[in-house]
Image 1 (tube, rainbow, N blue to C red):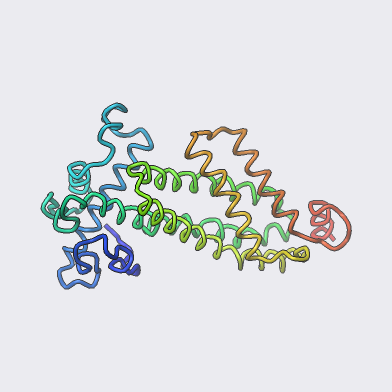
Image 2: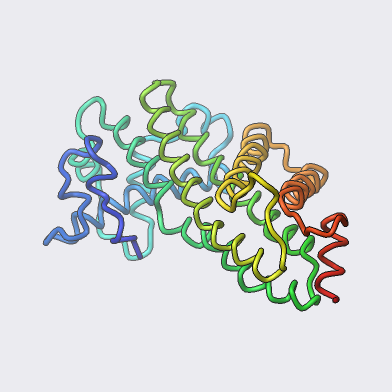
Length: 278
């Protein structure tokens, strides 16, 4: 399996793993690092199956167990190309009575830093940059582009929020909640940063400007915060209806349009149409 060796996992996991070398991709005993990542992937796969309803155990059974050492070890051993991973490997990394607690901490941080989210973080900005020229040429409405990206963004952010809330639900310890919240916010902030050059390029291509007081960074943070609010609602209440998705898309479109100043007194949608056709 592919793991993101560019992440400084020993630093990310810090005091929550017994020895930093067990999470170091540069460890001469590469298998030690791989086993650590397989155990985390095993936990993540189990969470994914429980959240999606693919798990073979009953809901009542899951409510009692949720995520245990035995379950994690079993799932890690099922992964493609997995070396033999037993409970001894788990206890070596997360020993003692607090071992499961420390594993949850590493799992939370891994979830927010794992390679699987890189494509999600890059999708919206990459697609916007690729399709903004079509908006400039008049073959694609800006409203449609925003709708496509916002819908995908909400779906992925809701999924991420479910992971985050699931892991928080395993504990009520304030320290765990603080670390999980910090990791989650860092990830969302990184996503916001990716959008800054996209908004700047959009201004250039579409020939508009921001209203006074609005910057690319500020708009990116506002859209991200709006998305987080909706995602938390969907994840926490299971309120993933077409009506709510349409409401979310409309709110993002309104937020972006309200930030733009075409400078000719027309509503932004009409101003853009006139400008691009002119």
